[in-house]
Amino acid sequence: MTDFQRFADKALQDESLTRDECLSVLQSSDDDLLDLLHAAFRVRSRYFGKTVRLQMLQNAKSGACQEDCHYCSQSAVSTAPIERYNLLPQKQMVEGARQAAASKAQRYCIVISGRSPLDREIDEIAGAVRAIKQEIPIQICCSLGLMNEGQAKRLKSAGVDRVNHNLNTSEAFHSSICTTHTFHDRLATIKNARAAGLEICSGGIVGMGEQDEDLIDLAMALREVEPDSIPLNTLHPAAGTPLEHCDHLTPQRCLKVLCLFRFLHPRTELRVAGGREHNLRSLQPLALYPADSLFVNGYLTTPGAPAPEVWGMIEDLGFKIEVDYQQPVAG
Image 1 (tube, one colour):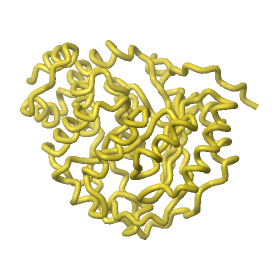
Image 2: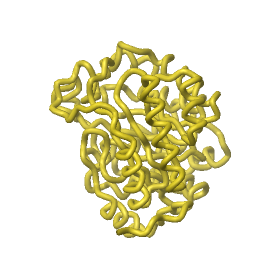
Image 3: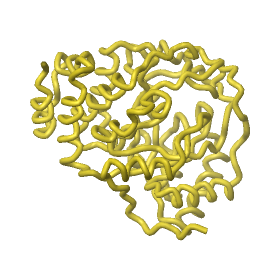
Image 4: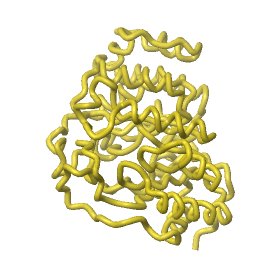
């Protein structure tokens, strides 16, 4: 059996696993899963204890995207029957922040579809963020597509704390899931956001047909990016997308990938993101042994567990939700 505790020791000493060691995590026997989770939890508990931070998404503009991301129900190549609408009014984005705070979310993420945000969309989102910050001291993340440094600076000046822009997969596999922009386009947006003084949230999607080597490449590329937060999505195939039949993940596979990312990113917030309910199913609680963050109240075009259900899962584990601002009184 692989000595996973040795991998935890390396992570706690800020040493990277070798590629062969990474493969041994991903290819480990399901019978050894509890040993693997225990080793990953040693690392998680060193830097995050038993705390869990929640995040809530606001799909502020849906559909009509010109990009061809094969996994996405909002893309140009999707025929998925989703709700489509232009940018929400500022008051709805502010109301979403109130709901996020009431859900004990540490961070509220405003997301829009499209290749890049329009100037007027930046202005509207900036206005909403200013209004939110005047009322609720919740952290704000924006996921707006490809951005230049000027756009990122406008978000920063409005009070945005963090930008999400996922690498999604390895550089080698990227053209298999998207051809309308490149892996390096994504890296450039991250560079622009960081130059503007914004925190970085960047992760990926598991289960799109990639190989183990691609997952290792993604994890290693993120070590170069050094994000503040890594959301790890597991594909929830949407009918009408090119990947609609790509539904082969098991809960065990998802947990092994989370453990690998914890070993390679010991000090970084690691979020169990989209696809959690679909792919982890009854093993969802075990994901919090390597990971320290979850989404509440669903995703962009797919539903998810409501906040009270997530609170109960965290409490049953003996873990604690961490929120570093005063929550509003419900009602």
